[in-house]
Image: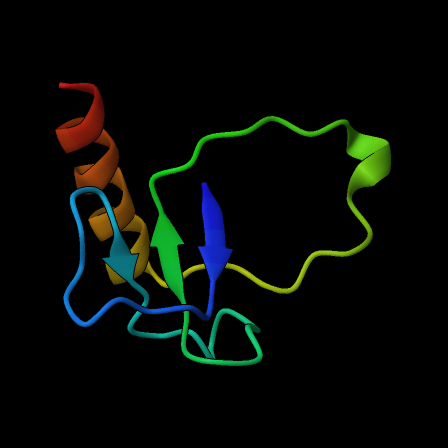
Length: 68
């Protein structure tokens, strides 16, 4: 899913506001958007970090909500 620092006033369907964004190594407060993509390994420049357990759980819930 896409992660961005562009927030809406309130989360839309499938969006997850990341609570522990700093612990995840992100540079700004961030939101995961319901935009799915796959990338070739060669396009990944670096790994910023890992989402905290609470954010991973919220992300899983959002994916279930989107996919049914």
